[in-house]
Image 1 (cartoon, helix red, strand yellow):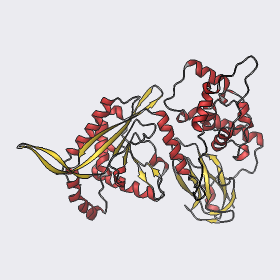
Image 2: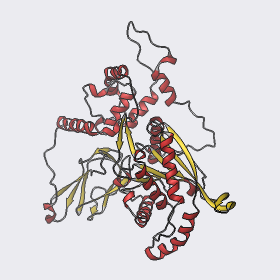
Image 3: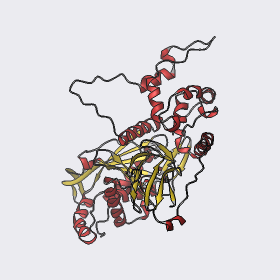
Length: 462
């Protein structure tokens, strides 16, 4: 019988590795064509990997919890039909020596580090003297290593000024004693002793040492737990969300601008059209595609809101890709992206919004569908919030929050004079990165979004 090598697939443009969270098939189990074999998890999304062949799972080469680079063989499938051999990749019987494997891993690591620009911490600047000191003392990339370190681990070590000598002494829980991010963070948390100053050097006072200040900020005092309190471990997605939020706060200088908008024309138009669309297309008409249409038009008018900041370089995005924050049944959050939103009709946006939202709730999104966003919409009005101050989704420079649509008595201007009327009102909250977006630009962009909503064409059909 022929054998087939099941490899770790490339799950997205910027994803270089994934963690095996669960084997859906055990050794000896039969596998049908396109039947899921393993569940994988990345920092972007979770996925099930189907088998491209029929057969029997002969061998699992990695365990649950292992992090594996893309294009690495993770399992061997013994095919039941000989005619599948043409499309299968035969397994080499010759085993590589440990040294050969290490060299290959090192080579992959070097290639990964050269292409992994996303691992840089955005927005941080150092003086020339600080950069020199960091590279001389603590940059693990400048020193020979006896084992593989991922770019993320190297960056953390560099940020924390951990020398290669120290790094080599930290035990790893990964395959072949590989040091994972969790290993390094746990070691940093538990580290209490600092290296003694060398001869003729005077140790700075504890209050003057930047590392001590950083450690104090990152290691708060232990929180007491009462007898009846319940301690629940964060799930993986919540940990990632927490890390991303802290990173965004530490990267961008957040400012939030507010604008109340009259949604009466939109509310009345939607009330007329939603039943028509449901009957004709079996599609729900929510406010989300209307918001996305207004955002896309405003981004075209103000392209400097559709940018990213890489250090002191501004990346002007050609495409307008609007992410929409979606709440999941377990309380977590995910942001599927509407690609090229400015080129789509309102009907097209409606269908794509409904499709992505439905598959997000069912954990069926593909990795590419939550990447590449250039601006984000978050609707906390759905949950009854009048307004909020959203956190920017890095590496974007803006996120628009929409609040609850409420009926309010307001002054209405008419040709015959002012009067008091009942109108549907909503508050927009624009959080933007003040490093690149000033109040003038943010205010004009917010005003333009409001104008597109207030001047909505109620004569159109969908």
